[in-house]
Amino acid sequence: MPGVCKASRVSSQTDTLSRQAQDSPTRSPWWIGAIAGLASAAAGLAIGELLASIWTSLESPVVSVGNRVVDNVPRWLKTWAIETFGTNDKAVLLGTVALLLAVGAAALGILAVRRGIRFGLIGIGIFTAVGMLASLGRGSSGVLAPLPSLVGGLVAGGTLALLMHRGNLDFAGEQAQSQPAQTLPAQTPPAQTPPAQTPPAQSMLLKVPNRRQFLGTAAGVTAGAVVIGGAARWLRSQGVAAAERLKIVLPRPTNALADPPAAVELGVADVSPFFTPTSEFYRIDTALTVPRVDPSTWTLEVMGQVSTPITLSYEQLLERPMVEADITIACVSNEVGGDLIGTARWLGCRLDDLLKEAGVSATADQIVGRSVDGFTAGFPTALLDGRDALVAIAMNGEPLPAKHGFPARLIVPGVYGYVSATKWLSQIELTTFEDFEGYWIPRGWSVEGPIKTQSRIDTPRNGSRVTAGTKVPIAGVAWAPIRGISKVEVRIDNGEWQEATLGQEYQKTTWRQWKLDWTPNSGEHKIAVRATDGEGATQTDQLAPVAPDGATGWHTITVYAE
Ligand SMILES: Nc1nc2c(c(=O)[nH]1)N[C@H]1C(S)=C(S)[C@@H](COP(=O)(O)O)O[C@H]1N2
Ligand SMILES: [Mo]
Image 1 (cartoon, protein in one colour):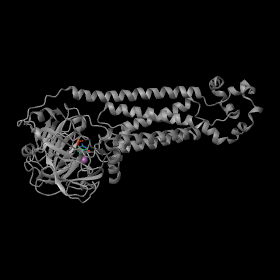
Image 2 (cartoon, rainbow, N blue to C red; image 1 turned 90 degrees about the vertical axis):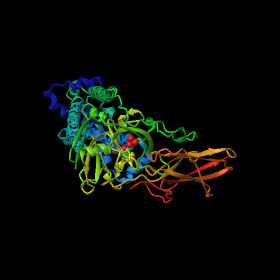
Image 3 (spheres, helix red, strand yellow; image 1 turned 30 degrees about the horizontal axis):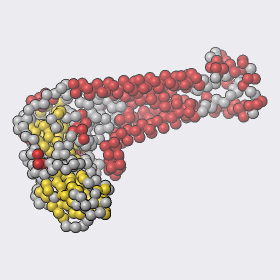
Image 4 (cartoon, rainbow, N blue to C red; image 1 turned 45 degrees about the vertical axis):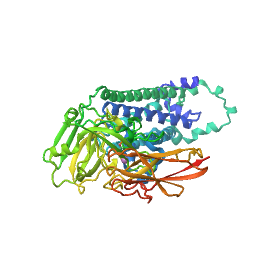
């Protein structure tokens, strides 16, 4: 290797000669190309991340591509991803995008080293174009949106050129193509031309790959990318900290609710608590990275078919009369027995008051919430029938966490989140169903999404073992907001339906705990549950998938008593 190093410090006048005096293969091993490609991609991506963390309205290229995937995946694939990866679906998607990018980058690097740099540059150009196009989707920040991909692409291309130059790889392709005969000497048995016998003068004429210099530069570039990427992450986390440091003092509600009666809980271990702790509250949204909204510049606009459009700052919103309401919200993608549901004490201003002030035109029949990231969800104006629909700013006594919609979101009792619960709310638009479709509607989900009556067995767990001959509580939750729950029944092994004990009646907008004591005989048992809502309608046994408007069927489990 040291000899090779010296060989690279050859003066340019010998270059022409060196091409003819070629006596070692110019073909670099594949991994040299892979490293060149990966290091170039890392440099480009790090710069893209950095730009996106400095201008928080810009998306990083990976996130842009991921977001366009999210927006365009077919319904079955989305359902499958939620089923398979649960709330990790986002990490899986971003990981997949990153992996494909890495494979592509390595392949381009190999191509560049073997066939010439222009192939690598064309490839980088294609990746850059994809990133730029992807940045133009929902919630795009306008003409600047493609900037992280564009600059990242230029940096990646420049890095590739630099690496190939430093490694003396930039002629390899030409030589290999234009003078194939030069590879012939390599086929000569080494014994006949041992390296030691090569005259020094001749080896100095070679323009041969310089591995040490190449690897040194690649290591430097990679270290730089890691540092820049780390700085980008840190910058982003500072943004969050800034919002949290604001130490928001929550306004007092005008209707301060007492705690729910203790008897809403039945004291059975392993049953969902009445209030879902915020840290365990399910999270579902299309946002690959949680929008970090600065409350000092954020505004909420009420516009569209209204007589007096309103714009509120965060401070002004907090000055409005605030009410508390205990509401169970659920996701339409919740399978029978699933856990995409939770109950919280929400604090917010009443949507009906706000809209009264704005003066909704008689022509409007849809209320659309729009998020800072472009997500939209719409529900009928008819839902403002006195129920506690809120522009919520807090849950369970704390300002909304970023992932649950800080600084404000909509909460509408009785309808699934995808038509109502817009997080990171920036606009409330009054429009018509004819004129506008919310985010999920063109993707095949139902226009209206009333929450279906459901019940779930929390304990015992499906497939678990229980002790025969001892008392085993069967317990869980049932919900039918805003109709309320009037009865829950349990059926064991196709026996009679037995009425369960219910947690104390509290509010129709929340779920109810239920339990039934059971003393199993040894053997396998099937347990099913069904609820009856406050209007006397019993949950259907008809199985329906989550799409297009929510799953139905009885949650049924199998346990083994021994
Ligand atoms: N901005 C935004 N708001 C959104 C969504 C979204 O994708 N983007 N998803 C909705 C859906 S489908 C549901 S079920 C609820 C979930 O709210 P949570 O994550 O706070 O539980 O948020 C709703 N609000
Ligand atoms: Mo949802």
